[in-house]
Length: 396
Ligand code: RM4
Ligand code: MN
Ligand code: MN
Image (tube, rainbow, N blue to C red; front, top):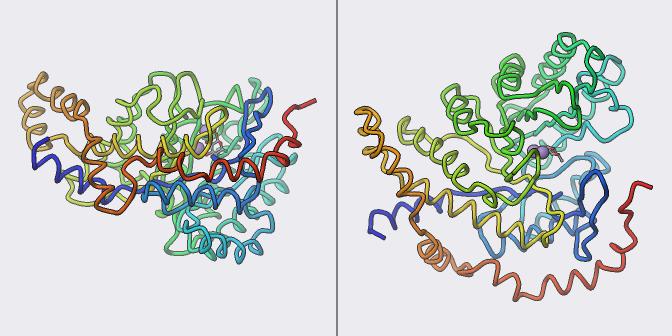
């Protein structure tokens, strides 16, 4: 690798950070049942502890995303204990995720529910989440809605849109000045006929109605098959409406597989659009990189480390694209040269430079190996196995 390229990889790694989800360490499954892992985390403390291990060996995951109902069961009263966990395990709370999909009252929706009392209840949960975020010094409040309908004719789509506009505007008015509201979209599931925020256009519309601190959150698994996600990213960037990502990979739908396990070139193309935009505009895009995966089968901590190191590699590769040459080739419609510039960058092996960067930071060259040799997994497996074996995994 040339000196120019090594320098670029180093600089890219200096700026790259990615947030890990607390729920990535807990037992998860499919709608047919949960698969229990003996070492899975069941408490917020265990999630912080596991996240701390990922940060310890990678050095690039200083924050953990929290899900309000799962991690802050006592609302704002949970704040002191979370602050304590953050200090103890060396990872700060990151984005705060509202939960408007789990409680029975949300069977027919939250912000889109025809019942004004339920809409009010959902709004109160959101306001509480903003307060929790503020007390934890978390900037981003992330909202994903399961709202929608499963049979034609059963919901008034336009009215529900209006209720969303109202509730998100109210939510936005409660934000603290430094906070952001990130609004996620998803085409289907759990609703199978219409979903209230089904795509980036709907999310962007609602964000624009709500106010300037609201931005779109792109979950890479939340698109139809073969949709061009990097084009969506480019459009959102040019509209200053891209707030962040939930990274994961997919083969069929919202599969929540390991990032880059199916289509690493797509993640590379997404990073390329961001870095190309930054080069062209001369400004850093204010984007939260987050992981949102469901580690059903592979060891959760190991899979998280695998994801983080893959993200680093793809980001570093994307940084290698020669923007001056690419612009020139694009303007001259030199298709072969333009495409080759992307392919050459993607095909560059950056692993050696990443190891050198880790070395320079006093981090293990091989984070996965360092974790596997640490004895941590054996220890938590011993500590948690008995309890986890008693956890309910079936719906019967
Ligand atoms: C959803 C969505 C949200 C996440 C939940 C658990 O599919 O991706 O971001 O909070 O799952
Ligand atoms: Mn998500
Ligand atoms: Mn999802």
